[in-house]
Image (tube, rainbow, N blue to C red; front, top):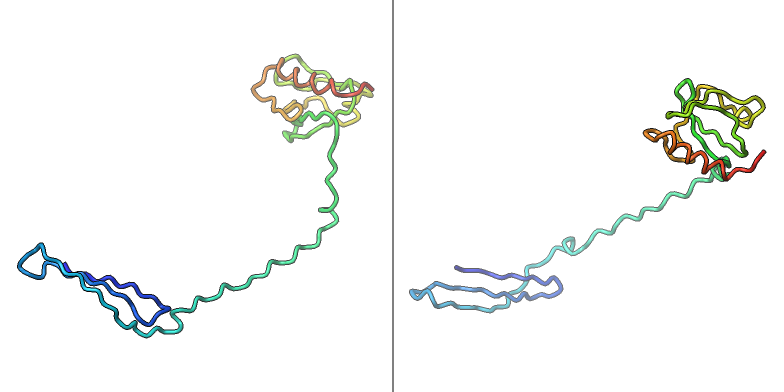
Length: 161
């Protein structure tokens, strides 16, 4: 086996080289190591230059629009989301108690009647709407009792009218 180790150093004119020569004679146990220093081949100046990374300027931030600077109004109160008779989900925010609507005591809870002059009438609730979430928690798959626990918990936070 004959080998050559070549480790160029571009900062120097000379390159140390170690060559291994073995099995060159009749005796396979003999090996010869030859150390030498040879002149480095001339380097092309372009090989040593690393191209500079392009400078990219970040775009200036866009001026905020008036709508973006104003906080979106957050309705306060106890939120119950209803599915309308047309299938649209619509949140209703109750701010006082009693709520003012009636329903059958079974799940899913569907509004059967709106009390005239009630808070439910004030905010636009209509008969036939189905409760789909109470206080941010979905009602699908829940029992009537579980849904009512959510309603009672939320209503307890409201002030009486």
